[in-house]
Image (tube, rainbow, N blue to C red):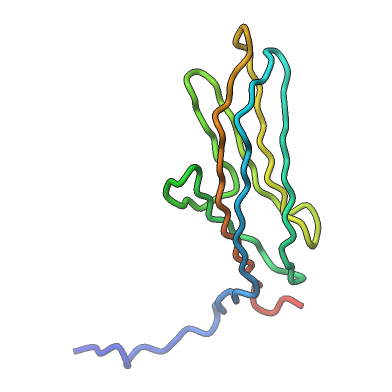
Length: 127
């Protein structure tokens, strides 16, 4: 019979090390966009960075469940909005809402609240 303590940990594969954690909320108020043009709304947040680390994001839109990823696509009626989260420099993470409407008369976007949890992981033997 094999017991758990009979197995040897494989040290050829070192785990990632979590080096930083942060969370913040981006709020985009309700807004009406005229038809035929693309619009971007951005918010910047200061978040620490460790050289060589990789950011992972958990996103929750309007009080929903958290999902892993850096992009959320919102479908309202026939309109699509996208929200993208990315690090733009060593201290700043940007949340960008992008909207493009071709509907005659424009589009009225309801308020959007995005909660972001970011964890930074450093690969083994980096720096």
